[in-house]
Amino acid sequence: QVQLVESGGGLVQAGGSLRLSCADSGRTFSNYAMGWFRQAPGKEREFVAASSASGGRTFYADSAKGRFTISRDNAKNTGYLQMNSLKPEDTAAYYCAARMSDIYLTSASRYNYWGQGTQVTVSP
Image (cartoon, rainbow, N blue to C red):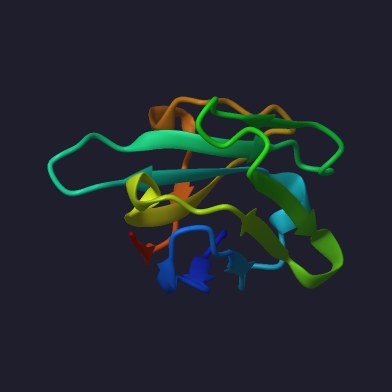
């Protein structure tokens, strides 16, 4: 059973950085592809980045390319999203998700497990 807990959100000025963490207490994290999604008030949940189960393959939304980096440490059952050069439009609740496959996908409906979310607020 996968149980995901995000941390690392907060308030940051535009241009700043944050690193989000996603810890799996179920100890099966290495079997799952991982995705990061975000949802701003009044908007649909959108894909940000994804990683294969091994971490060897990654994929980013256009809005994240060049600024965000997804990574994982399967020995620690933890995934990360390093976010640099943050913009006010990055403000949202960020969620990590996992699916029991080595194949990552960009559709939220294809993920089986979700964390509770962590808020990221970027001030101008």
